Image (cartoon, rainbow, N blue to C red):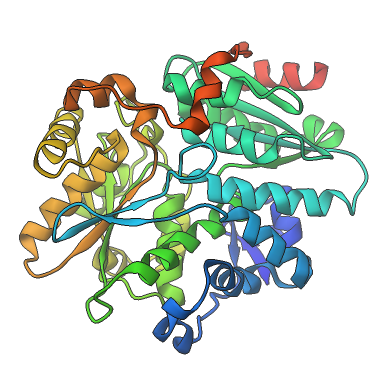
Length: 432
């Protein structure tokens, strides 16, 4: 598979080069030159495939000959070695639980796949690769866990001070070894801007081999389509494909779902469920796209005012507003509505949503009211325990801490405080 820059002025590259570079030299995101089509017989008989077989079939065309067959089979098997259950909430709405991985968040899939790909590639080159990543919440923990102890790879994570939950912060600041956490006095957009500037800086790129583990990196973005296939495996009514509501911040997740759909996966419609950081729902309402300054909310992983991956959505759907609006509906959900949704769903159905899942549930429920007879699923992207203050206040009881997270509370946070601004980051990278 060949990848090109969406800014159209950089050389085309292989999957290997796209993964190692992260972002093209012209500041564009890499995009596959062609979209593979899944054999219709695979879709028709999807329940007969194991998760591992299905994952390999989906990912192989994107990887091409950059990774040998046996190694890719191992990589995808290690990436998805936990459950992805589709759980009924009520008769019309199902929850695809993506929080059963090691860091209790959907980003485990992309981080595990990318870390193993970079580990494979690092054996073929001299010098260490430095992974530079900004996080608004779950990315940091997933990347830290995925890359921990990977030889030939150093990881530097930037996160906005005071704007991630306690569990999220512990997951990205307690690893040690090859993982460093930079606590930035600013917003996620500040962190993301600092990372983007680093990739474009000649001095840094001369001295360091930088790559990104945000969803701008194809190896983080592409495997996210896998759980849409796993969801369809479990969907009972194959004659009526689901409406899928995706909590959306940087738009890598919903873009991966659209990619799966364009490849042949049956989906009735997509819903981009956003909090008040709603540049894309605004675009879907008006036809005018304008980035916004990010506003803090209780669904913090979606606090993104300028979603990087929306340009991929537009490319995938031909930069055609009519086609985009036909495939995706956008919803804006306030914190008050999010809290109310958590409380009501728990009371009515005894199901506990996290704030991001609650945004998606509300949007999906509103859509289904206007489209009677349809059914859908929401992507529950993080375990409610990551947001104890909000969720416990709404359901009136404590959330049990999963066994896999209990050890975090026995560890000490280690972070390096930093002012927002690229000059601060550059100085630290060159001297550390």
